[in-house]
Picture: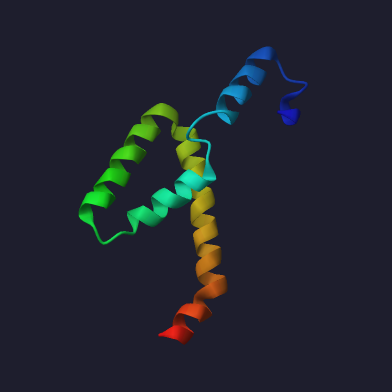
Length: 88
């Protein structure tokens, strides 16, 4: 909220709304991305349904959340790939 301290009341209100929004949770997106990688078609379908609903509610937050998770996943894969290949 400090970034918008000099902004108009409308911008401050929008920022407060996004900050407290349910879908403003990186942990939530990380869990959903991991679940989407499940072998179970039922689980993947549930994740898809949840993300479809979330997009209708707040597409911007879904986009930013998935973007951040994909960056984290790519970093993890790159940095820790040796653990996977050594144990195989």
